[in-house]
Image (cartoon, rainbow, N blue to C red; front, side):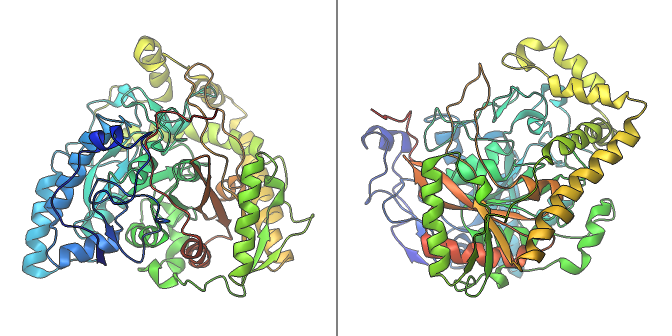
Amino acid sequence: MTEVCGKKGLLDRRHFLKTSGAGLLASGYGCSLQGEGDTRNGSEASDFELSEAGISQLQEAMETGRYTALELTRLYLKEIESVDRSGPILRSIIELNPDAEEIARELDDERRDRGARGPLHGIPVVLKDNIATKDRMMTTAGSLALEGVTARRDAFLVDRLRAAGAVILGKANLSEWANFRSRHSSSGWSARGGQCRNPYVLDRNPCGSSSGSAVAVSASLCAAAVGTETNGSIACPSNVNGIVGVKPTVGLISRSGIIPISKTQDTAGPMCRTIRDAALLLSALVGVDPSDPATEAAGGHLSSDYTQFLDPDGLKGARIGVLRQFFGFHRDVDALMEQGLGELRRLGAELVDEPDLRLPQGMGGPSYQVLLYEFAQGVRDYLVEWAPDAEVRTLEDLIAFNERHQESEMPYFGQDIFLEALELEKDPQGSTEYQKALELSRRLSREEGIDRLMAHYHLDALVGPSGGPAWLTDLVNGDNSSGGSGGAAAIAGYPHITVPMGSIRGLPVGLSFLGRAWSEPELFRFAYAFEQATRARSAPAFLPTLELA
């Protein structure tokens, strides 16, 4: 680790932004920790001394006595106050853990007396606010209907993080109900947290539903975060906020204690600034949970250390299929993808770029029907088991709550998806139609989709664009997102890693690696080699808007 500057002498970020032109960060300011995992391209700097610091660098700093866990926690809390709640006002953190400092203090005592538990000991992390914690924080999915309600116990993944020594710093804002309330929503908006903002350009959208997790990580308000995805909710915010997002195989991480959409597609996953940090975080999150049957299949596929798969030469000899069907929605994304493909070739990959290398169309419709069928029962089960003190008990209760509180819950968009799901819940033919939709979506995404392409072309992975650059936030018309290649992996329940590949007018975009079920080791190897060669991530500039004239 290279110490760039001393521990003291913080420059107030709000003053810094005012005195640095249009908010662009100039070299020579501030302090940082740099190390092997730092992917900055060298043109950015920050006044915050922990800006862009990786987990390994923070861990080494604690081991050498430069920082304590308590000092790290206080620094992140101060930065949240300076950047998230004032200054740029990102609104990425929906609630802070009132016990974070005490937890950090106890972990410092333990380190001094018995040594560190592992790589996450004393590391401050943020959780999406649909992940249950049994502490003084709420778990609400951003909804006022669950305000004041605390979970009966920790989610399984929270147990894993606490056992690893992580400091749960707070809960992240999100698209309310994980963006499964209305087709006309604005990603990153919740009644509890307001509209989360993209740290690169503040009037741009952070995507969702894991909006706050991505923004907090990108803006260095925490060391790492956990998001959740049903279809794109890790990948899209990671893409537009310039970070690494890992959507693992469904079952690799337990869903117990996560407010659900779909038992067949939901998963949690790491959201970090580097592949190494994502590997460290995933290592702590995985595990077989008797409360989540999906994890039983993961038993022979778990690793206690995903960093063992990180190899800067990991693309040599790899056969990578190019998903060109997902090109063409944005010329500048296409240009970056061509550069990225050239880099893959330079790094030794054999690209299979055939016109017939295509995933089937039409899987989105039946998949959406599956989500509608699974949502109502999933919410009911969660509320009974994890939030028994909540006044709402069913989807019907939630709809009625929103109707009674329209001014605060539905000022910009309604609850049309809730109403669709409620109608299907009452459908006497629902069981038969559900099974048909599930079978079709899985067949198209798996047997006739990813599995077929991988086998037919003898591929190790697939690549495509993660999505387009961030769009303007529009609370009148809702989202205006475009592009992306991860839908089939989400529907199949297969892994997907997005990694920064460049930017368009200062707005980051990513490259996606997709693979078969349980192929996380291979995808980590490929994504790490690409990341280390390109170092495409740049720190956010907190611009008010883009001056395009």
